[in-house]
Image (cartoon, rainbow, N blue to C red; front, side, top):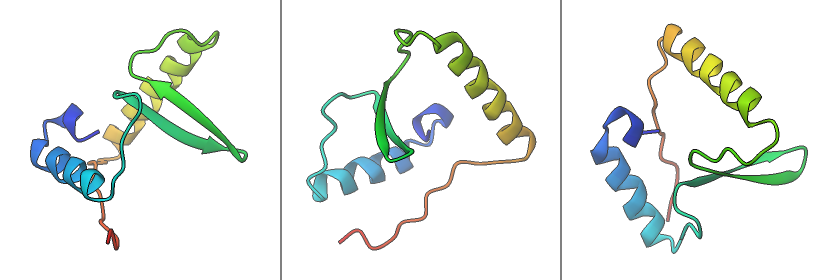
Amino acid sequence: MYAEVNRWGEVAKIRAAMKNLGVEKKCPGSSWIEMERKIHQFAASDKSHPASNEIYLLLAELDGKLKLAGYVPELIWGDLG
């Protein structure tokens, strides 16, 4: 999210924290989400899912609603060490 809005300082902080914690993404450009006790992985710009058109339409709608509501991406760092 930070890279999308050109907040490169925040991107660097997250990457440094991940490195310090030994966290490594096996597939760069991907994210994970847990839904109903199942982990789902998403790759950047992946259109292979049968419902990808509907998924991307929903994401665009959510993004628009967040922006209209004044949402600005923010990360609150907890105890990382």
